[in-house]
Image (cartoon, rainbow, N blue to C red; front, side, top):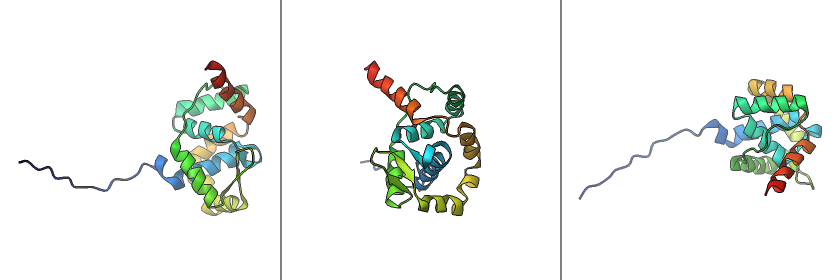
Length: 150
């Protein structure tokens, strides 16, 4: 009878799935692109998804200039939800009654102390171009179209 032997080897986790990396991205998005350092779950997913591909980020930049969201749909990432839970548990974020997430004082201290803007320098530069021009209203109007199409 033949036997198969497996040797488990360590493999690294891609940065996009590491909770601290994802938390860093969330804090950047809220700090740079959200009014009052507060954003909805859908908006966070939109920015997270757009930041994965340069073409998507370019579409978001164009949307910010035209004041109309050109992206009709975007991905929902379960690892972002997990990172939001971790960040909330660590008091980096607070959850508001309307479901949005807001930076806390601890998050502001963490961003400054860790030099997060410098660590994510490319992302920071891209997000500063978009700034706060993608509004919650734009995101909600696009999401409403999803319901209308069903």
